[in-house]
Image 1 (cartoon, rainbow, N blue to C red):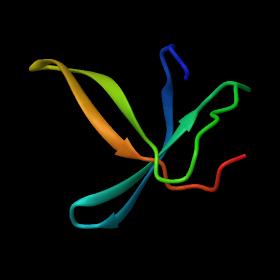
Image 2 (image 1 turned 90 degrees about the vertical axis):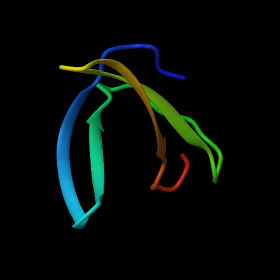
Image 3 (image 1 turned 180 degrees about the horizontal axis):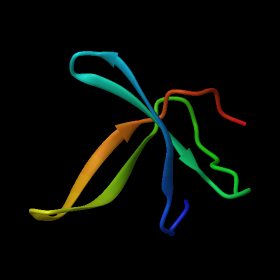
Length: 60
């Protein structure tokens, strides 16, 4: 688990309503099992929101 502020390195539009987000982990590793997801807190103009994201890369 990474409990830190992360920056989005790249946003790739896949379809009209699906995007791939690549985060800059600043040298840290994200360890996960296939099928896991991550809940991320996002600060928006409307306030703090939580979103769940599927991890779409192979585990380390």
